[in-house]
Structure formats: C-alpha cells, structure tokens
Image (cartoon, rainbow, N blue to C red; front, side, top):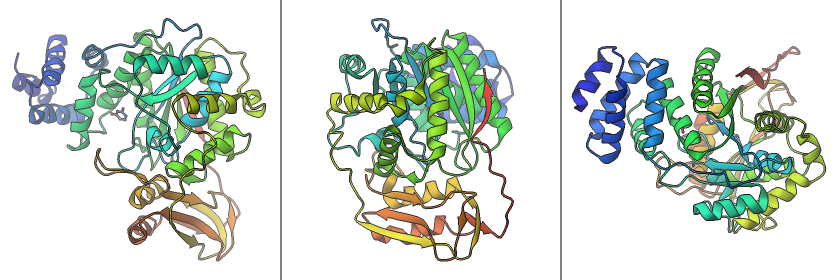
Length: 425
Ligand code: URA
C-alpha cells in the first residue's frame, strides 16, 4: 500500500477500499504518511465526497487509532451532547449539571475554541482554580461526586483525528461533511457514551450555512452513532444570531450561572431544556423533569459540586475585562439582524478566542448584547458592549461589526427564525 495510490483513487472519484482506509489512517498516525500527502487526500475527499460505507470505515479506523474509554463501572446511564460550534454557545455549562440532576451521568469531553467559535474549556477556565486536565481516575471520581464532568479529552482518544483536524484547519479542508462527521463521531464513540445528542448549528455563525448541508451532516452522524450502538439523535438549531446575550469566556459563564439560578435569556433556557429532554430520553429516563431541576436548585447544586471537585471555587468572582466600549443604535426601529459570525469574529478579535492553538485567551474579553433580533430599539440606546483588556483591539473588533452585521428596520412585522429547526433520528 502507498499514499499516492490512495490519493489517486479519491482524486479520480473512486471509492476507497477498507484496506486503503485502514492503512492510510494508521500510517498517518504513525508518521509514515506525510502531512502533504494527507492534505491532498483531505482535499480530494472535500471535493469528491465519500460513500456511507467509506465514512463508516474511516470513522472506525480513527477510533482504532487510540484508546476507548469505559464507563461500565457507573450505575447511572451515560449520555452526552456535542455541538458543532457556534457563537455564544454556552449550553454545555448549564446542561451537564442539569442532566446529572435528573439522574444520568454526563461525561462531557470538550475542546478549546479555534477561530470565531468559543470553546467550552476556555469558558470554564475563567472560573478561578478550575482544572480541565484530569486523569481517567479523576474523571470517574468527579462523575461519582457530581454526576457530570466537563474536561479535556486525553491524548489517547482518537489520536488520528487530533493530527488530521490540525492539518485540516490549515489546509482549507475543515468543511468536508465526511471529515466533520467522522471527526466528531470518532471521538464521541471512543469516549464510550451510551447515548448522544448532537446540536447541529445552522447559519452564519456555524460551519453549516444552510439547512440542507446541516441535514446531511446530522444524518451522517446519527447513522455513524447508531451503527456503533450509541443511541444518537440530532437537533438542527439556528445560529444566524448569537445564543443568549454574551459571547466570551467569563461573560458566558456568568450567563450560564444565571440559567442555573432559574433566570437567564429565554433562548438559552429553551435550548438547554430541549437538549436535556433529548439526552434523558436517549438515556432511558424519559420521565425526568429538567424544568423542575432548574427551578428547584438541584441543577445548581450539581454545578457547584462539579466545579469544586475540579479544583474551582464556585463563589469566586469571575474575571472582568479592564476596558469597555459601547455601540449605540443609530436609528429607532426593530433590530432585524445581529449577525452571529460578525459577533463571533468581534469577540475573537477582542481576545476571547485564539488564532493559533498555543495562543492564550483573555478570560474577560467578549461581546455583550443589549438587544436581540425582534426587539424594538430607540436611537441612542446601547446595542452592544465590547469587553477587552487590550483597548487597541477595539477598532479591529468594530470593523467586524460594520457593514450589514447589525440591521435596524422600520418594520412592525418581524418573523423570528425558530431556534429549533429540525430533529433527525
Ligand atoms: N468539530 C470537530 O471535532 N471536528 C470537526 O471536523 C469539526 C468540528
């Protein structure tokens, strides 16, 4: 077997054989296939696609490149959620303790942000003392103590994906549906969860800009999960405007704690409850009542136990950025657009995100939204507040919000986009 023949097969729109797939993934993980060869293959896959059987084999080969976790010692059913990434998407934070409070175990292996979408671990790390890196034993201890754990995936989980994802990120090959589906599902299947709910984002702030692509991605991932014995369901949810009223690490933690305290923005509460119901249903706990667990404080109790078990102080004040700049409405009317991608890029430029894996992030940086699409605003009213420790970034962030990112129209009839667009099983 050699890399060039594998690349040629896909370049010429052929179907990769099982042997070709197993070999190329294994040889790439071991360093025998070079980055430039894997880049060429990834680009051929992006351009020419893969059949369902090829994607299934590719995923299985990535799972086989590393270890598989085992939660069979737990007495509660395991259930997990994965979002394809969006702006202001802090849902994992209230969701994991909420589902734990309803009787399931939630091992939430999460990532850091790259580009305009924030990462769950970056958000959680703004909590003083909280640790993302846990050994497998520590992870099981936190799960036993709090019913949920949010932590970094260990290096041993799907190492082929770790290498390939970093390569795709710098070769313009992230957006291939077979590669996204196999990347996400190899990690989730290797993680060993019994049930999985996928939140596939659609809109300007998401990888998938339209509903058809999102449906194809969701259907592919649900098929992969089901074939591997993981009860998998996907919700397609809107990402044309940010979720909630904040985008940025500590800002989003504060908003998540508001949700756990029974308040918070309506869209964050709606999506948290919808995903919780799906996760509990998939875990075989259809009678659990997540709305009650939010209202009676038991979800907050699980949050506090999880933070404490991971070295954090749930009562410590969260970091606040040193500088602020507020943008005001130029006219009166209805806010008809507040573009998710533009807000995500602005938050990123303010220091909430990173351009390279090794860059640090600012805990307090980000964007606060004072109005959401559909709200009436008056000329001069505050629309957005930008937060950063480095005010020289304001101009660059404001550039992202120029043009048609924000639209105020003199209209009385505004049709909001529903938050939940579809459900795929
Ligand atoms: N998230 C992943 O883990 N992999 C992708 O390919 C895209 C998003």
